[in-house]
Length: 174
Image (cartoon, rainbow, N blue to C red; front, side, top):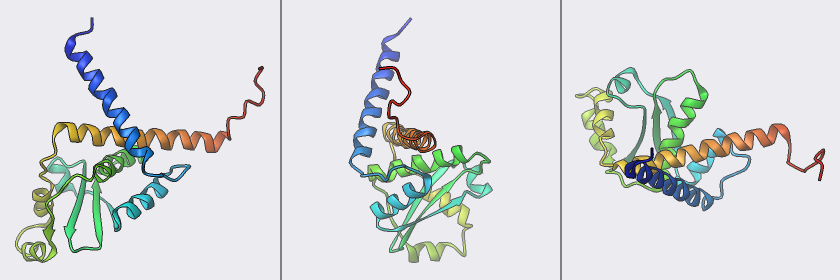
C-alpha cells in the first residue's frame, strides 16, 4: 500500500536526482570519471588545493563521517572522512562533501589567525567539531547526497565501460 507520504518522499527523491544530474551536466566532468580526476576537477572548480585526510578518532566520536573545512586566507581546503577499509565507502564520503562544494553552500569562514589563537588553548579536534556545526538544512544534505550518489554511479559506469570497451553492438543480432 502506497501512502501520500511515501509518494511525496519518492517525488522529492526523484526531483533531487534530476537536479543533481543537471548540476553535474554543467560541470564538464572528465571522462572516464575516476576518484583522482574528480579530485583534480574539484580543485580547479574551487581554485584551491583540496587536502583529503582520514578523520581523527575524536572527530568520529563527535559523529563526523565527512567534513569540508575552509579557512579564510588559506590556499587550500580540507576534507576529512571517517576511517573505513572500503575504498567505495571512503569515496562516497568524499563525493558527499564534493556535493556541498558543487552546491556552493555558504560557510562561515574563520580567519586563520583566529584559529591559530585557539589552537594552543583548545585541542584541534574540538576546534574542528565547533567548525563542523553547520546550518545545512535536511534538503541541502539530501541534495549533496544525491550529487554524491550520481558521482558514484558515473564512476561505476565509466569503470565498467573502460574495462569492457565501447558498446558497439558487435555480436548482437540486429
